[in-house]
Length: 119
View (cartoon, helix red, strand yellow):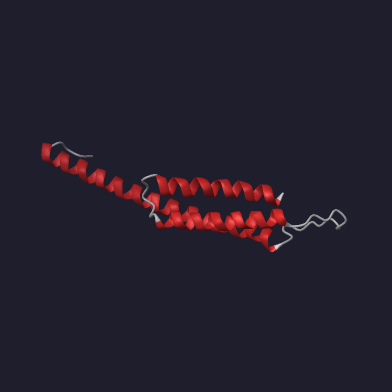
């Protein structure tokens, strides 16, 4: 289960890193580097999980994670991804608020210039 959860998060990180670095967004490009760093850590953790030896005689465990690589891939990286998404959404919301204020000011200035009452 842990490798599949980590793979889903890895795909999300790929999409974030590509969209931030390739598109013209209000998010600073430095956050694309943060996404790339998370992507590198996640890829390393996933690779380490796949290299772990499989012992069929080992007793079944109900633990969520069994190694440091699984802990990084399943717990740490998703937490950092959530923080990264929070920062990205903050920058997008701030840019939206600025654009909305500029539009309202432009409409107000246009209304004043043409003597149309504003409501």
